[in-house]
Length: 165
Image: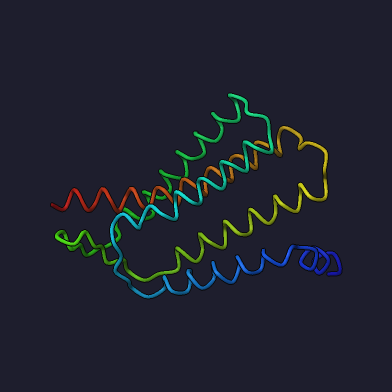
């Protein structure tokens, strides 16, 4: 228990601001909401950008790392499509609006991102030596799957928008 408390109290203060913001957005997504269609891609772009920048600035850019990231991104996208393909959406074509059903998926996605980023941040902070290959691949795969889940949902919804016309 003491280790968990020291892990939590050792985090920078801004980490908790991010956590509160992610919780706020996640809880707002529990209720149905109408958003502008391009807005679906803002968060996936930010998530993917942050995860990709972090991966390839902390680790040397190598072709196998990139291949692992692209593969896991695709796996996350496929999983996301399977989860969201039957989601009922309401579209306003003239205004390019989509009404999303409420649910816990956004909250779960955000908390997954937070926990994974926190975990890898802790590992790197407490072990300053380069990660062993298997851990590096695990980090790359987890980041790719999370980014793929995020993008996959948006692409699935966009596909449904154009298919419904």
